[in-house]
Length: 140
Image (cartoon, rainbow, N blue to C red; front, top):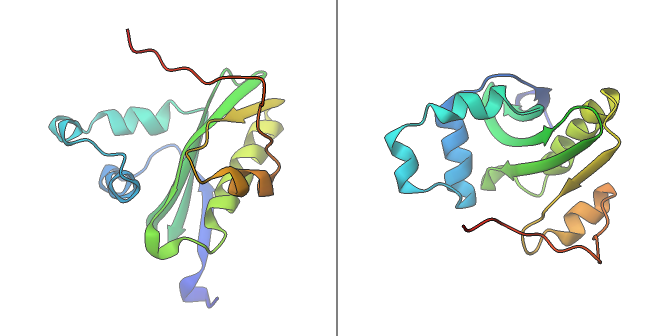
């Protein structure tokens, strides 16, 4: 990889909302109703316990974040890399950087819910399925 192609992984506290939207759209996570007010994206970055960005020539091409009490437990979510940059280890670098940041701050339990097809990816980083646990979502 040449210097022009280099990817930088950084912990950030603000990001260009349009670049985050591009990532969410590329992953299929963006809903049309979000277009009405994208201001929540600033809060999303600022209020995450850790927000990691992958940058190519100063453009956000990947991200991941953690929500946490910043004392003991954290959950990693929203790990995504733009399709043209996938299969190059960027997602793995993002998750590892988030883990390093959380552990440096004393967080000793890190979990996540992976989407179908991501089991091997997360296992390669050191995550294990929690066989006796069931993820739930509140639907009211």
